[in-house]
Image 1 (cartoon, rainbow, N blue to C red):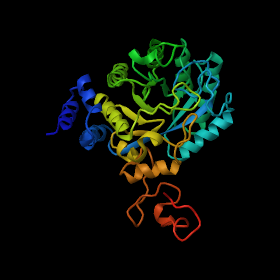
Image 2 (image 1 turned 135 degrees about the horizontal axis):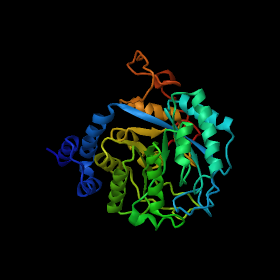
Image 3 (image 1 turned 135 degrees about the vertical axis):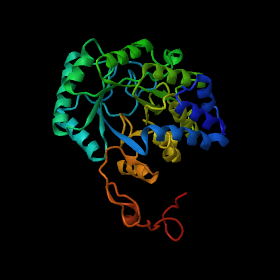
Image 4 (image 1 turned 60 degrees about the horizontal axis):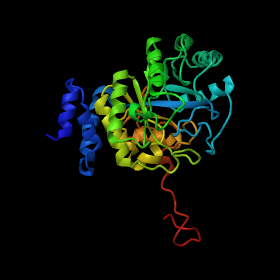
Length: 363
């Protein structure tokens, strides 16, 4: 039996993966990439079947942040060419969230830049959540507002917030090299406040920040220790105008191994492919769904994702279904439509460029 299948057997039997085993997954050779994915997929299927949870981000307030996180396009001193605006009006938030829900999302993530919310900010978000849940009673709401003060997590829970996101982002041993305006312990403390308030903790990491293999493993085991219910795995998007501009450490296979490592370490947790998946996973996005069980639909905080319809087709074409989606009868070709025009209805695209034309070839 292949070593990764043995590891999957042990994890399925209740024996947690050890750090050296997680390191082995990260350092596996190219010839072992498919065996690694296959073994991790057994854990994913055991806990989540063939469903994919679809999440939708609404950036309530963009840019204008006083923190110095070196990976962030919204940081203090960033000259990245991004949208910058203060708080959206409640009707704008509801409109954005509704679009995501109509696209297939079951969770809406309400995010605001900044170190942390004032009590007035928390009340503002609470009002948005109340209105959103009034219009969409079944929606799951995750808030992401930064470091929380005492009592703020409880106020959000009372307003109907279901989960709170605050990423550890990296290992404690690497944290101070990427941000100096707050400590790693501040992030852990906020996640603990979230748990104490009865909110579902959502906390993950960013890969590609110059961390070592050992530090990636350190970060994942810290997330396991925190008992994060949902673990977003972000891949650095090195915006021009930030300290990490021009940092390209990731390959598609590297990203796939990171996701697999996360699945082995936290087999029963929601592993979400987050920002940077289109940029870094590229043609391996579909294979990644056999390891992860959650994605964001459409765009991210300050960057565009691929078309939402392409996301839904990605899920369908790899044999998965959107979590909570209404069952739809298969088409005559055996494929299930999920909104928009199907490939069958579009038909082949007729070539209008290259040989025989004056238009440049597609090469």
